[in-house]
Amino acid sequence: MSDLLKDGLLKLNFSQSDADRICPLMEKYINELRLFNSAYNLVNTDDHDEIVVRHILDSLCACKKIEALADDCVSKKGSVVIGDIGSGGGLPGIPLAASLPQFNFVLVERMSKRCAFLENCAAILGFKNVSVKNVEAERVEKESIDIAVFRAFRPLDKKMIKTLLNMLPSGGKLAAYKAKKEKITEEMSAINYNENSYKIEPLEVPFLTDTENDARERNLVIVEKLIG
Image 1: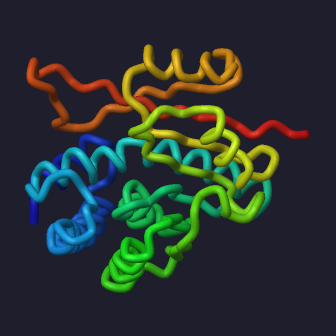
Image 2 (image 1 turned 60 degrees about the vertical axis):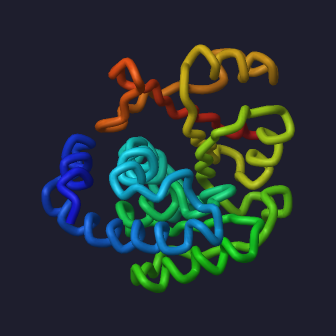
């Protein structure tokens, strides 16, 4: 078992017992990613430790914030569905589902072969809280997802925001993983969102550094679908 993974979870304020439970699941998942990566183009590396840092810990750095959003949703309506939109190889959905087994997750992915991979992972990991939806984001049923998570490596534009908000009910939340705050502000301004209409929550990914050994900036952009 990777000490890097467990150390990273502890740095993200997971309890020792949760880290002990999550680590074996994530190691199985990493094995599947490495096994099928060349065929399905799931992640940008086959190196174990890079997958741990750049994909598993990067996905889980927002876990506590997403848990808080989900708890709030449950308190208001009694249940919650978290959707990983454009799930690809299952990031951030599978690490989040492993860490938050009390919530239901839907992994939305348009490519059938990746959906087969996701279904296989869910079965291997014994997840009862995960389903896979083989559909384009634009075709997700309206108001069927309470919290949409999106590991956003491409810019948020008007079309993407409209698509994501369409699948949420009033009061639903979009939680997009993004990088630099300055770039986020530019993107949101370009789609006519002022700074009072969304939140930027800073994130820290353990062991993620650039060539200058400075921590790479990561943020979570939270947008609420307004009532009406």
